[in-house]
Length: 169
Image (cartoon, rainbow, N blue to C red; front, side):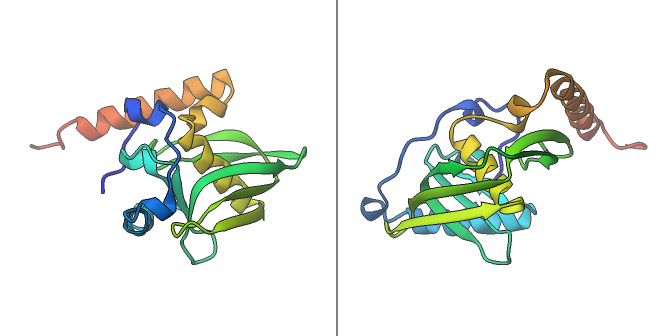
């Protein structure tokens, strides 16, 4: 699977809810997303990042890939922390993003069983980041205007240098 990069328009679209008991393909989708995420390497991946507009995320912050369907943040702390955040769809850049330090998310497993995951620190950040992807929101959308402008400038420079032929060719 190929991870889509900004400014692919799919990354700005809202993903559709899934019906895990009625969609037997979700298990294989989640497994493939997990492999793609690890190969990238990353700690989270949302289905829209691979061009699939389904509300499915995978993440791995403790050596175990977890998949969630239709995840929703149901609780969030008022306390926030700003930290540098990267994204597999914006390779090579990071931006400071404010996030709640604690969240609780509810959703379904790929088998359709209800699941609730509470996290703080990195897990809370990853859950919020991936759920943002399901709503068509990127880290650039969470950054201050100045940070967004600087990040886009760096990203465009990186993209331009990657397209340039290597010296001597």
